[in-house]
Image (cartoon, rainbow, N blue to C red):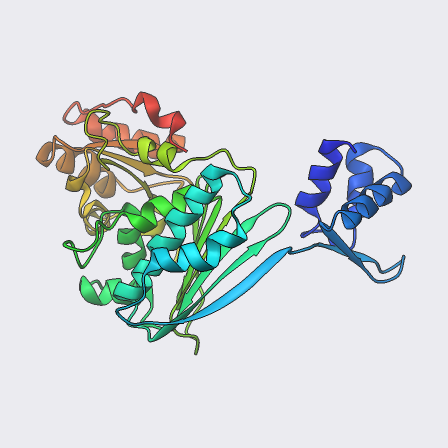
Amino acid sequence: MNDKVRDYILNQVTEHPTDITAIATKEFNVSRQTIVHYLNQLSDEGLVVGKGNTKARRYELKNFVKKEFYQKVDKSVEEDVLWREKILPLMDDLKPNVIDICQYGFTEIVRNVLDHSESKSFLYSITRNAICVELDVFDHGIGIFNKIQRDFNLNDPRHALLELAKGKLTSDPKGHTGEGIFFTSRMFDDFTIYSRPLFYSRESKDNSDWLLETGESDRKGTLVTMIIPPNSSRTTQSIFDAFSPDKETYGFSRTHVPIELARYDREQLVSRSQARRLLARFDRFSEVLLDFRDVNTIGQAFADEIFRVYQLEHPATQIFAINTTNEVEKMIQRAQNRNELKPDAPNEQKQLF
């Protein structure tokens, strides 16, 4: 069985349940019968399920693990015990690095539920099929963005998301570092948070973040979904190292901030107040990577506040702009030229993700 054809079918069947035969036939320039043979083999292996007759036949991945658990919240609950007793037995055949990532993400998110959600109970689940391991944690509490907005007296839940994305954000510095969600979102291939009125998604394969405003709903609480392929080569240590430029202390001193999250309602980034909101807590890092993906232009005052004013006042924090358009780059250079601040991006930048 050709591995390329096999992997293509497994990765495409979810998006093409009714026409997987047609698109695979076209992709590999083989006969329809050949692809049907592959699908039958995958079905025999228990990886794919076919339903319906020949003309209306549809295929889907078969989940060989799908378990959901209910848990009341009280002082006796320990996240590592839930992991060890409920989740780990359902994935102990996976690669060690994948198990490590799942353990880190699961225990961090569950601990946040126990300490911060104000929920009386929560659900957690694991789903496994041929191409992914998915962990979900759903609580019925105040909602993560509303909680941050309230605790830090922010004016908008979107501002709460921006602060969360920077890392090192916690309302309980004695009990938490504020690093868990930052690192978890970068260890998994897909990481999402749904907490009304926002839906936040991060995809590690192209290092992209995106945000949807879902509007008000009756659904309370927070749903966190974490997905990683079982053959992933990523490790927890590689992610920690990517944000620790000081190889002597290995501290979390580099952060990556998607500028897109600083925009409200697709507004343009032009004012000093917008820049100051973005710059909050940057002084906790020695390096900040500002990612301008999907931001085509910025205003002079916005650029000046970040790349001249702030850099003069905080020389210990270096700010690097990445994924900039020519227009954005010109505005940044204009600000930097006024005080001759022209830092080169760190050599490790391309190896971060």
